[in-house]
Image (cartoon, rainbow, N blue to C red):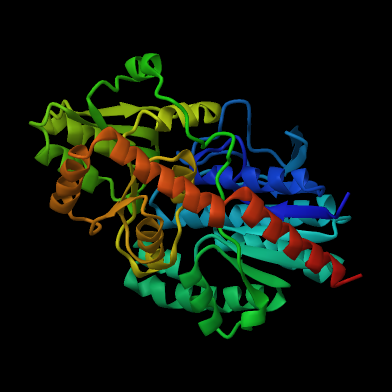
Length: 415
């Protein structure tokens, strides 16, 4: 056994999409010889509804794939109401602090999966009460995320931003290491006055059992209603930040192309509205497919000839590498990126696909047509290039080893 790691994450299995990342990370650490205990919440992402088989109660303990999971209560919500969303975040932070000080009292170090940033509150409590060092692994930068979200009106935005700045500075000051998931994020954290020696680049990696190249399953395609010669696929969370209206608008432009279809896999707060837009426009080239079992994702992604990675063009997202990008690269699928900044640079640098201006349906439609004109083997070469880039720079072997080393260093700092 290397060390005993405590992990704090508001999201965890069986939650899917980006919420599956903490489970991937904890299992990777376990496989590297660490004992891992996780403090998390009641599963409710991305819909805000508590999963079947769970309920909001003071404490629940379970074992998931050799990782001990301690669940704290929270107010379940994932809608656009700022009061409800804040209550969701803060209720977990407070309840998890109480659970963590007991459940993680014997750990050597703590890893914070920092999204939302309030998930670091239990680590601060452990540092103060139990002298446990922690590594904060930033998934999205606060307060930029909150300010960019549009949740807050102008009367509240100022004091909320100032409060969050002070809170984040406190977290970074007390952390043993500030791990970031993109190069641009490292620059922004350094500008806050964090010593560059304290900052480490640890990109997210994909669950390589679920995201890998596989052959197309014709029977699965039939069952899911994916039947056109070329399929543009989006698989993930249907949220406001994903800007999926652009995809629907591109599908509208290409509605007369009987060879091109669009498949949206997953769900989220924007699903009902997007379905209505498709229905109102009478788009027969768009199919919605519900959440898919995680162990089927390789086969599902193989049905998409082009995989879309899409984010709104906000300053915040220019320093973001969405986990969906690494998953797509690992699966060896061609990428159509409606992104800017670090994510766009990865797509270009890996030669895995093409980049278009976020929000431009015309550019997206043109790029889809251009990709459809390629021979299948040419599209396959894009996917292969992306997978090679992933294995070299973002694989579990590369990133999990780096994170494991940081946690061991943190544990030694109090020895």
